[in-house]
Image 1 (tube, rainbow, N blue to C red):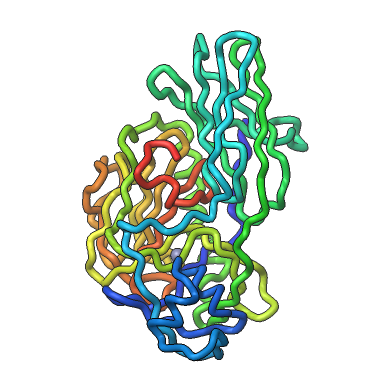
Image 2: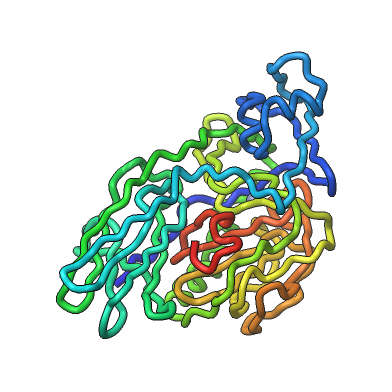
Length: 355
Ligand SMILES: [Zn+2]
């Protein structure tokens, strides 16, 4: 029995108006030149240079030019290391995964040498109902692979795993570190906030949650490295904690935002089946692709959707066009990689089959 995970927080998105070559950003309460540089994957000295700044202090309302980061220069990783370790059982079986992660990092768990059927891999502590969270294990050559993750906002802790292969149990663990990104204040108008009300939120989760659940039963459909769905700059990073109103709750940015103009093509990040295709108040023009093994990719705010539910798509196929629909103030693509319903860092999937 797996836990049905209901993402409790609304999905909010970015408020920057992007152009093809550079961005303007209006300084908000709580911003520093350092936090702006970090959020846009640039440096303080680069911001000083292109804006002709005489000092590093910025004022609320000040408009800054932000240099673009093209997709050929990957954003610096905030992940605290990807060193892997191998955990050996009494037989020749072993379990390999990384030793450190932050909330939202996808953690690939590879089981080598398991004989006779899928291993059962539990992730984290026993739950109050006596069950454990289990990874969805999928064959990969002679190995079995599953992806674990911890939710955005989780505190630092040790995550214990147990891999059961027949009668053998291999225990292992990884350290979950504190998310290094601080909380950003992005205060928006009540009119914008009212879009993300409970009714709209529940209406959209009623479509998303069954898709996540179904993906755990769908056979793995992806066998090639993941591709970025649009060839443009990152404009807002995954996982950023934000407050959208003074004193309001902290919300997390569950996806990665890419620059785009209305009408730019959006491509399927990998092979799969379209399970969501429609227009919604918060997420706007939304496509969801079930890739199997518990993996769903999501594409928000489209002006046009070119695919329909049930349609099989291949990696790189155009599935829709960039728009500014839903909870946005400007055109861009918000892209998510969900693992058993929870958001993981899309950047860590691109260019690999398993992150
Ligand atoms: Zn976004």
